[in-house]
Each structure stands twice: as structure tokens, then as C-alpha cells.
Image (tube, rainbow, N blue to C red):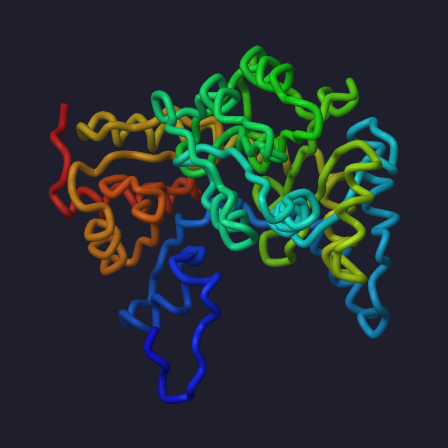
Length: 371
């Protein structure tokens, strides 16, 4: 590797690793392209925003930000305990669910251990494991869905973690209760299922499994969830995990000293109480997701079934180029070439007006074959 002018060279263990690509911020797109109106449908955020109760709690918490946050997140974990009917000892708060995933990998994977995940699963699973010890084992999907039987077959004596996102990002597809329970039953001693349920609030399939029930049953499962999606708190970075106390103790051993910030803790606890805001958010998503998916199908695009707050569709062209062309029209979506889905795009479900703007911008590109 050639040294740059500064003389610094990346350590060899970083060679070949890719970085997470977030959705482009609205302000950046406005500055770069000279646009005044931009619609962001790239990061699966709640278009209705956060609960007013969460905003009020965040404002109140600002008065005490000279103090370090409660490292135990006592009030937030108590609120989660009441909401989920699990003991406080089974709960861990984090800076979004991704921080918890990173901590689990660092705590559980030794130098020669591996983790099994799916080739088109949430990309941070692969990236975090690869950065830790290059022990990610990728299993092909079946019909754009986690093939849990094949993933069970990929487990060996050095497998310590199996990652399943349910529903999955970026495909939106999901695994049903019987499939997940069969995978849990196939786990050998010393192997843990990391069940990422970032979008579970949107899941309206009667056969959608309850990860918390698996934890209650004593299964070797850690469930990760977030306040960034239906609760609309992505900018505050709050998430949580549910698992047996001994699993969480291993994670706490290496966690940063103070954990989730004080404002995020207060806002997240308050958001849990606003049942009506969640209901309205889920209902808006249900109606608009059906409209967007139907409109894409009518235009001749292949659309994956989704149990989340986004839809993924095949553009029939180079997805990154379609992304750029939509960007020029003030609509930010997510290209999926980092997932090796080069002709696909993922579009978050926004407000009715935002979704209409997306469809109009897509029509202006002249793609698809109307049915």
C-alpha cells in the first residue's frame, strides 16, 4: 500500500473493508444541487416525526445536560419493563440498536470464531463482524428472504452468533414463527441468535414471531430493537436489547461507561407512553405502503413484499444511476449496490405528499413498463 503525503497508512486489518453508506442528508443535497425542495425517502424514518411527548421530555432533559447520564438508564429500562412485561435485568439500553450489535460482536466473538448471516441482510452485520475478525459467513437468500434452514446448516463448531433481521432491511421480507423457532432449536451450545427487530412495530403478519417470547422461554436469543423507526427518534440514537441477564452482562463488560445520552433516555421513555402516535404512524405506513407498492407494480417494476416501512423494487436498470437521476429531481432514495443488488432501490414510505413526489419523479425518468 502506497503511503499518502501525510505518511499515514491504514493498518492491514482494515484492507478490503467497506464503510456503511447512510442516506444523504437533505441539507447536503440542497447545497450540492442548488435545490430548494427535497424529499428524503432514504433512511426509513417516521415521516410524522416524533411524539410530542418525546419532544417535551427531551426539552426538559436539556436543563440537566451538565450532568452525565444515568449509566443504567433506570427510568427507560423501567418503562420498557412495564411495556414488554420482562424483568429490568433482561433489558439493556444503547445508542441505537447498531451499537448493541457492535458490542455483542466484540463481546462474543473470539479471534477464530465466526458469525453466520445472510448475503442480503442488514449490511452492518457483515461489516461489524468483518471489521472485528473477518469471521462473517454469508448464506444466500431464498426468494429474497433469509434461508434459515441453510443458515442453520452453515453453523460449525466456531460459530458463536447467527444474525437474522426480521423484517429484513433492505428487502423488507420476513421469516415466520415456525422458521425462527426451528433455527433456535438447531443452535448448538454456545451459539446465540441475534434477532434484529428494528421494524417489528410495523409487522402485521399473524405468523410474525415474537422475539421477546423467545427470550422469556429461555432460548439463546438476544433481541435488538430501536426508537429510530416508528418512534421517530433517529436523531437521538436510542435502542435497546432484550436477553438473559448473563448475556447482557457480557455486553456491559465492554460498553462505554455512560451509555445512552440523557436526552435520548428521557425522550425514549416518554415515546413509549404515546400509544396513539405509534398507532397513527403504523396506520399511515400501512395505507401509503400499499399505495406506493401498488403504483410501482402498475408501472411494471418488480416489488418485494415488505413488512417494514419501506418497499424495495427492481428498476430494471443500473440502480445507482436511477438514484442519481431521482436525486437531481429532489428525491433521495437508497441505492442497493452495497448489498450486491445493483438494479434495486429501496424507498422509505413518507407522507402522502412525499410519496406522490417520488412517483412523479420516477415517472419523469421514463422507466418501467406500465401494465
